[in-house]
Amino acid sequence: MRGQRKLDHLRLAQSLGDGPAKTGFDDIHFVHNCLPEINSAEIRTETVFCGKKFPLPLLINAITGGIEEGKRVNRALARAARQMGIPMAVGSQAAALESSNVCSTYQVVREENPGGFFMANLSAGASPEEALQAVEMIRADAIQLHLNIPQEVTMPAEEGDSFFRGYLENIRCIAETAPVPVIVKETGFGIAREEALRLLDTGIAALDIEGKGGTNFIRVEEERKGSPREEVFFQWGLPTAVSLVEVAEVAAGRVDIVAGGGLRSGLDIARVLSLGADMAGIAAPLVRCFYQGGEEAVIKYLQALEKQLRKVMLMLGAGDVYQLREKPLVILGETGRWMEQRGIRLQTFAMRGFEKRPEG
Image (cartoon, rainbow, N blue to C red; front, side, top):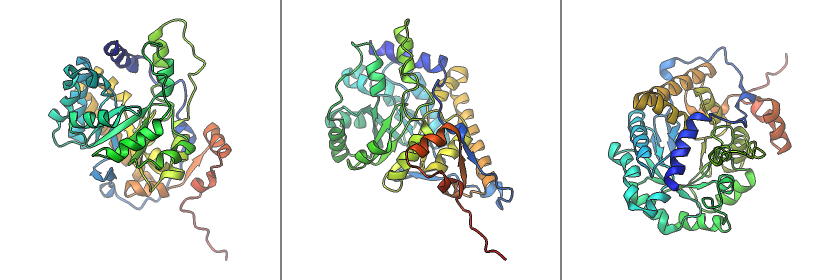
């Protein structure tokens, strides 16, 4: 049952595309700088995440594992991560905790990239002992604890979980006992300011906000169940742009922030870095690239993202990724209205770097 579900997820990640919910990125506009006073060769894209330095503010987020097809995908992604020098997360390792026969579908990443930075992955409902097993399985440098409640309650009753009480204390226990940094990760529905504040008190190292607008796992599970589909919850969640601003408002400087959920270009990466993210996460497009052209296509896509990011930084006069947070952003439309309703002052973003000249 679990193996078929993982195959379905790979298939539907390719065929369904994004949405129908929106990320909010189309409402986020940089103010062009016609005098950037910088050369292309001076652009620096290095960043620090979980105490480690990386050449790009980009990570390959959790996708798959637990099946032979997942092993093929993970092998190619690990090689791409090695080529680009970026971190990578494996998919949920619950299958390997149930059956050691599938451990190799996750361990392949370490075989292909012995010196890479890898993140283990389990539900936030996992026990501290299970978290340790997941870390040891791939000699992980960090562990993601994922929150996917909308997906769980959409699955067929015999597959999905219905017990979610005690997650917060469980996360705290894992953060206290895990030998590596703990990252709490949403799976396409976003993290609000209120929950971010509660999570900050657990001792975690990072939050991966993973908002709506990319792969929609409510839609994925409805497609798996077949007709009739229940579409009433297809718009559920916080748009990635909104969730990121809410979380950055309370968590920036306290934990690392990863922004994922519908990022599809270097411009999107620049947007989330400017809004407060330390890293950008990407997943589904890499699956599509793999099935279109294998490892080479994945690497080309990642290289294209880097090139686009560098272009944006040049056009804004941002010499490094941290300077993107100083560049003005105009936030319009539904995204702007949502943020205003949540008490976020949009003018703070729009007036960045502006110094009023004295009259006369």
